[in-house]
Image (tube, rainbow, N blue to C red; front, side, top):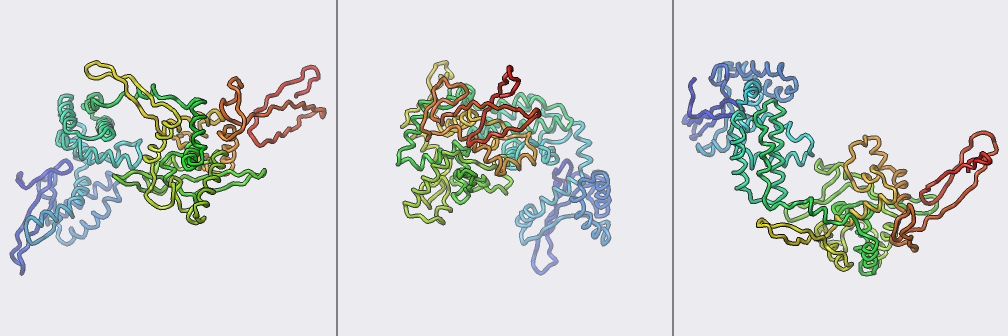
Length: 541
């Protein structure tokens, strides 16, 4: 059968569209049909031919068996009834346009899946010579793209490929996608972009991922795109390295004293509470997602209370509103699912905050339903943006300056850029204090939800248990803005600032038994023991 003007490309070969005006019925109807052409005969597939090819694909690609099974069942019935009839997917309607629209809406996706199953050997053969279009490559290989990203990010990057990149290079074959073609296409994409920095960066990631996938497939003629993708970088993108170098790593003692001095004022108790949660390891999305009813209390043997919080909900911004993301959602970042331990001083602030809410006339049930970020019950969600704005005002009142960086204009003139400090400053300070309290990399992961690839499933479950929560609580007792004493700056091994003064004891232990014995030391704080040996007496002390 020769080429027809009704033929259209699909999955690396051809399909055909036919519309038949059926006048034999009581009412006039239009039948629209999709058909696929057989590469072997160059004619429309018959039912028996298609069934035979699908059975061969079942042997060639065992992994595709779940997709092949329903088609084989349908084609078996068709082939038994009328083996030489042309296979088609069809819809009908009262007008030609509505029949075509209905056919595309309801049957196109099925046709694409069937075409990929039938034409896969042809695609693989053509791929060796780069004789496939970029669009067909994406269609066949999309499941292998962006292997290191989360499902949410993979979906976003695939969407960016379809919306921004394939309209420019989708019909170009791989063997024609040289450096000149890519440079022209990337320049065209860049000219049409009127998006923000984040979207532009995602477009760069999507394009780079596409080129890497082509390289992994065995076709090496498109590698220039890994270098040319920087053409998508906007000319106004900031130099983040300069900005990071100008930001302070953490608050100094004077700044921290000024900030907490302001927060300790009675009218700032609400701000002191959510800042205390920040210093315990929560981020604004965690604070806005959890409620007071999520807080659990562990009572220790000495009567102290350790308050913990299982971070299983976060908020995210969707367009102009916030929505709550559950841990059961695949878009929830798994490393953010953790057990948060409130520092001992944050636990004291929590009790003061609960007293304040009770004084406002709220019942326990009402308080349990309140989000931790809410100043009062009811109303819209107080999310990360609102907390960041409140913190900027507090930092200005505490006299903590914004960072300034020297930048250069396009014409070479230098100017000063002011970078306002925000939530990230307190998060860096909280991390600094945790490390000073003895937090290792695993503890930082447990506190802040950092990625920690070396932790297996069993060890990760240990991080959610009571024992490790109490161990973290013991370490975090080493610093508190509520403590009465102040350490000197020269105290070796001690954290400068307001803290509980460590007590030093010298114990003499004499072992006269002639065999090893076990010495047990117990304290309400973490211990740092040093051993010395009395060489004269030969005893260990």
